[in-house]
Amino acid sequence: MKNVLIFLLALASAMLYSQSPIGAWKAEANDPTLGGSTVVTIVSESHLVTTWYAKKDGAFLRTIGGSYSMTESRLRLNIEFDSSQPETVGTTQEFTLSVSGTGYLVSPSGLIFTRLDDGAPGALAGAWLMSARKQNGILAERSTDQPRKTMKILSGTRFQWIAYDTETKQFMGTGGGDYTTADDTYTENIAFFSRDKSRVGASLNFTYSLKKGDWHHSGLSSKGEPIYEVWSQRQ
Image (tube, rainbow, N blue to C red):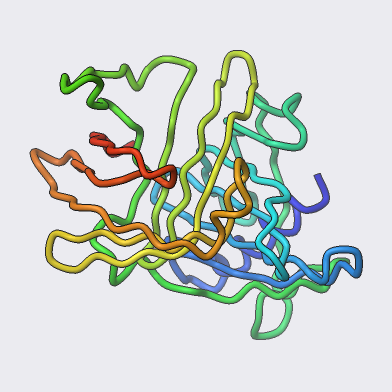
């Protein structure tokens, strides 16, 4: 749980400076065996995710996240998924927070988190659950109340999807990077992908629209297969 504490303390530092935590945050971890790793956290109003991946080749290392709440100098994370320590799923971790200097220095790690964005400029910031997917030309609805979920969380510039099951505590996969929205085009630039590292560096273009608050998303997957998905925002 050391790395989780690192992130949570950094996030709380921003809160204690009266800054909104919503958006994306980044730190660099020095690990000689990996050539260093990148730590990226995306925070929505209700949920957060933090992910570690190798700096040199984007190899996926770990992801953890869930809903969170903040009370004074304590942050409570309700863990929905943890790729490295699934036994923590369903537990609530509480952390005491501290500030150092003008940055977000975390002891004893020495990591400094800096803000990537504050939820802008992308049009899709927030936490979303897949609620429908087209199969054989028919749009099939998926309950967002079931233990098995696919969540997508976005800041103004960063995205990540995570597939997991809160009942079995199984982590099924994740991928993420940066994104842009322009007119009706949504573009993903992949920085890490747990299922296939060779996809790192690829860019995918999709058509998107917002209909009655839901995100409709269509195009070709990373495997080149046509997809049509509907995502509903989490509260």
